[in-house]
Amino acid sequence: MKALLICEYREGKLLDASYELAAFADKLGAEKAMVLIGSEAEVPKVNGTVYLADAGKYGEYNPDVHKKIVLAAVERENPDYIVFVHSSYGWDLAPRVAATLKAAQISEIVNIVDGKFEVGICNSKLRRNVTPTTGKAVLTIQAGAFSVTDASQGVPQLERIDLADGASSLEFVGYEPAEKKDVDLTRAEVIVSAGRGVGKKENVPVIASLAKALGGELGASRPVVDAGWVEHSHQVGTTGQTVSPKLYVACGISGAIQHLAGMKKSDFIVAINKDKDAPIGEVADVLVVADVLQFVPALTGMLQK
Image (cartoon, rainbow, N blue to C red; front, side, top):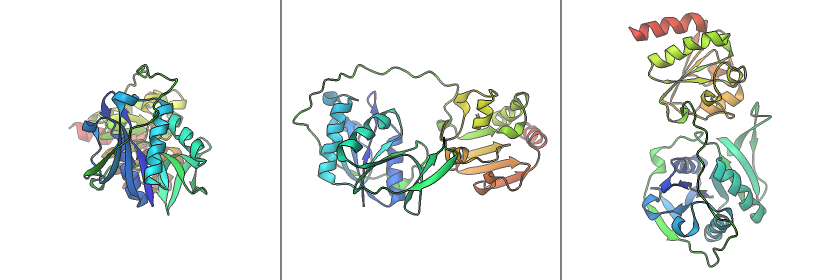
């Protein structure tokens, strides 16, 4: 089994999510090769072939040209899977490649279960396990869903791709910065999240105080964000940010599927919930069965001392 992993390169730098692609291939048990449209200085340090095309010549993004480069690597490598990160780059390019190859596309994979790809449906309220029926398949993986390990590091074997026809009617102009978020939870080592169990907006500062005492960031479940208690930039889950901190503390969060998919890769999970049978307990390393509004202030007070 082979996986061709399509790296992302922006403003002269290889994006860290490219190594998550390697972690995905490792979990799949696939032999991996990578495509980088970038610079030789940014070639990812992985075992396997890296197909390099010069971004100075072909642009950091041009869907017409980049599709040709990916297809050239597909022809050389003959992979079973062509894998992108589920990002704006992947959203745009993956369907173009899939349509040209007449291959199945599976989007926003969050896990691999018994060799099948786990994805969310019904706005991520449910999950299903999917397998493609075509000889090749194009995949996109949810950023943060596959933790990078030492197994993803190595020594690449470089091969260059130069197109005979690199013409395009499109011109890459540049990047427009996204609206600045209050916080980038994907980089936080400690996250303390508030769920519907905190009761009301006025109780959110109780959870924020614990986050501050732990030197972490405030997160939230979707119901809390939908209710307007916390800004969307703090939302954890498949419709928010997918995170993998060293410590994740879930306060009053029952454990809806879309939330679990966004945080279950955390190194250590503490859940605080009155319901001992809450689904969050299935992924928690420690489940504290207690009233959040009684337990959290007591814990915060001890930490502050």
